[in-house]
Length: 143
Length: 32
Image 1 (spheres, chains in turn cyan, blue):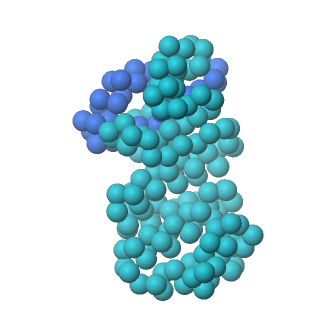
Image 2 (cartoon, rainbow over the protein chains, first blue to last red):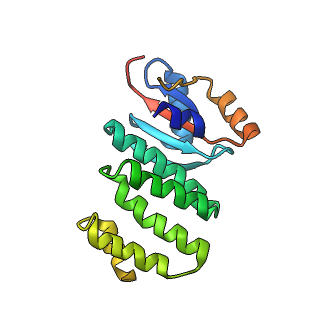
Image 3 (cartoon, rainbow over the protein chains, first blue to last red):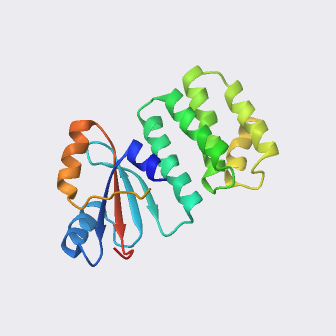
């Protein structure tokens, strides 16, 4: 967890009591009024991913990784995004983020190749894993 | 290995821009 954070982010914290003024200031700036709220900000300080509420360690790490992968996706860095999404499925397959990551890994590959086979293969994967997830339903149209 | 959170948010935002590195901003109530 700590390694992933240090490699991918500059981590900052405002505490609701110990940094009350900062909590209020940045809470208003970023519309964060509950704890824990964790924001992933791009280098320009713009929010690109939000995690609200407590999560167990593996689910929290998976969400952090998911947000970071989405950042690459939004920048059009398809290969990097796919790699990051697949890493979630491989390393944290039981996390709640894993089905979403598998879906977006397929989309990232499609965006990189413009080959619809990537989507069909993703739909096939959902026939075997995470079959009850909403992401399996979303991928079902690609079968 | 613990995450070493900083509390000087404005400096963090400035450095993020200079280093082209994303920021993880935690609004927390955890004991410090």
